Image (cartoon, rainbow, N blue to C red; front, side, top):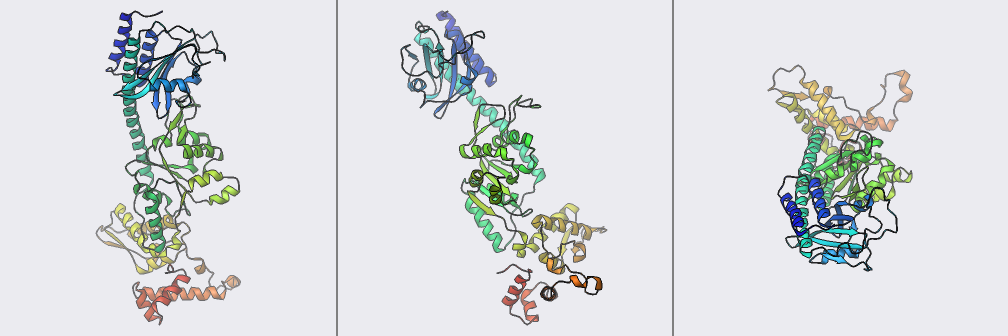
Length: 526
C-alpha cells in the first residue's frame, strides 16, 4: 500500500526531527529504517555505511542475519557500485542482468522460510551523501516486479538526503562515543600498568648498552613489529617502553599483556574481546586489548607462553589488521603496533612444535636482544647507586652511599637474575644499613656486610683446612685465578677504585690490568 504525499512528508519530517534529538546510535538507525519502511512498500531494506571500498550494513529489516553481518565490496557487487556512482535514486528493471546482493536473503514472514531460488524482482537504491561526499547507500527490495513503479521520485530523493544526513550524524556521534569509551579503557589500563611497572630510562655506559640504545633509536622510527629477547630480569619491558616513547605513536597508549598469566579459557577474550552471551559470565560486550591499543602499541610479554590454539588468530591480526570478538561475526579493523618479548628461544620452540613458524617470523621482523648483566659489568655500580637512591627516598633516608668494597663485590657477582636481582639485593642492603638509624639526615653507608650476593662460581669452594672436604677443592688453576682476583680487588680497593693507581701498585700497565680483570670476570672487555 502506497502512502499519500502528505503521509510521506510527515514521515520525512519525523526523520528530520530525529537529527536533532538526543538518541543513541542504535535508536537512530532503527527509527530511520522504520521510516523507510513506511515510505517504501518493500519486503526488505538495508542502510549501509561506506568504509573504503566496502559497504557495511548498520540497520535493516526483512533480511537474513547472514546478509546483515556481511561486508559488501562495491567492486564485487555491480548494483551497489551503480547506486554509489549515481546522483539520484536508481531503480533497476526486473530484467536487469546485474546480480542482486540480496537474492535468496529476503524473509517476508516468520512462517515463510528462506529458499535459495527466491530472487529479488524489484530493487531500488539511493546514494547517501553529506556535504557532497558519498557516505553510504539505502537499498529496498521486493519480490513483486513492479512494486516500486508508482513511487514519487522527489520523495525518494528527499528520503535519501535525510538518510545521508542521519547516517553522517550518527557516525559522528558513534565516533565520539567510541573515542570516549576508548579513552576510558586506555586510562584504566594505564592506571593498572603504572601500578605494576616502574618507568625510567636505560642506564649504563657500557658498549652493550650503547648498542642497545642504537637499535632502539633505529627501530622506533619505523612501524615494524619487534621481538625483544633476553634472560629473565634484564629489562625487556623497559626496552619496549623506550621503543614506544620514541615512536610516532608516543601520544597514544602502550598496552601490555602478560601472555604467561592468561588462562587458556579467557585468553582469546582478553586479546580480542567478546560480545554479551558469548560464554558463561559474558554479561555485556567487552573490548579486548587489541581494540584498547588501537592507534598505539601492544606489548605481548612472555609471548612464548601463548597457547598454540590462539596463535593463528594472533597471526591474522598481525597480517590483516583485523580482529573478531568471541561470539561475533563482525570484523574490527585495528591499527596496532605489536612488540613481543620473551626469555624463551623461540626458534627452538618452533622446532619442537610449540610455536608457529609463521607467527615467529611475523613477530621477529626486527629482533632486539637485551644483554645480561654479566655482559655489562661496567654498568653495575651505576645501577646499584640508582637503586640505592630510589630505596632511600622510599625510606626517608637523606643519602645512601655504597663503599668501594660493596661496589666491587656487586661488580664481581654472578647475577643470574640480572638487573631485577641487583635491584632486590641493593634494596635489602639499604634497608639493613639504615636499620636503627633515627637521624634521617645522616648518610647511610652500605658495606659488604649488608649484601647477600651470590658469589661467582670460582669463589665458591670449601675451606682448605677441612680435611673431610679436601677432595672436593677446586682445581689449582681456579684457586690461582681466585687468588689473583682477590689481589686485584684488594689493590683497586686500596686506591679507592682508581684502576690506574692499582695497576702502578701491582707493577702492571693499565691496559694489561684491564684485560686480565676482564678475563677474571671483574670488568667487561674493552
